[in-house]
Length: 503
Image (cartoon, rainbow, N blue to C red; front, side, top):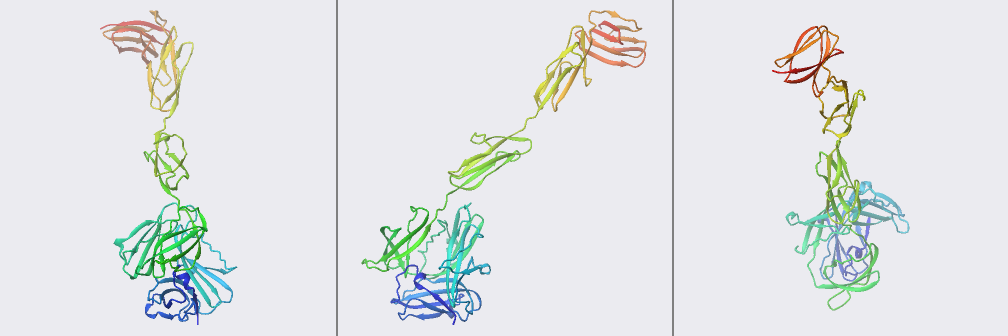
């Protein structure tokens, strides 16, 4: 007959039952309550044999209940295990798997009763570990719920639980050191279903368990000490063989600790012998939210936001978009990238501005002996700049290199730009000097000019500003309307005449 060896004292979680007050045990496989088995105790010891000979090869669930001589039942315990119809060998081996995924189970030989478990592939969050240890035909199965931290947790862990499909009355709390505390005080004695959803960030896991709610009996006193230091007594409620108790271990340092404990009744009679256990105290780090945003997302973005551990150094970086540059954070700091230390939920906002382009303006004189020009320099894009040509004595400004005759001249820079000023002889004070057949006169707001051949023509205001510059392409008479005033007319290479125009 295939046997599973179960040590009941371990299953009863530190209860008060002994071989003398156990009366019976009931167990069944795979939720088949109707086919349950009954084992009666005769005081021959706590170990019991479970008949698994009728099971098929594969994964199965064992549910176990124990009753004492007073008729009080323990809470049901459930175990997952792999069943092999024939013995493997007399060598001690173990097989374990996570989260009911027995297909990917790992196996090995027990060395000095120790086994190594590889959990590196697990995600952050709560998980179930199932272990099956085998020696010949004897098998022992254990199952543990634990919380896995592969590195530093990036989000707080929470759980939501409810009883008997009553989701409307669900409780939601934070996981502390991977442990959840559930209030079942409102439940009536009897069988109940418990559903729990554990979540870390976007990862969730759902578990369902069947358990028996025991009626409350008289309180007991739990006496305990940690690491052999000072016995402490606390009141507790005992439901059947299970002591319901929460002990505050927050003052302990992180690491492994030992605990000793025993219970006494109302008359200070000892209900259990001293039991010794070990546990690991781990710290659930405090996390804060770092919000890192841009004041205008079209100008740039920010990296470094998220959930971070308290006092951890975090780097936030403002990244400008093309055509923009970072100016400052919302607290006035201008460092970028910037290292911050979180002590609370914090928001940092990055501000950006459009880039300003600067261009070079070059102003030259075609002949420095005939005149000079205003200075060039570097100017911002779109800024209006004035350039001016200054003729030397005896010379007049003629035009810029692009043909424009405005002086002074206003320009708007959109690129690096160069302007060159050209000058000509100044005929002021010379009435007439000619060897060519050119005549100039004025009448009724016009200047009349007769040419004997094609020639270039310049007409200046008396202050040296150029009014007209053109080339006459044929001989003949030309009339040029001008306002009243005094003008200098230059035609060809040698003809210069001062003209007064009146209506």
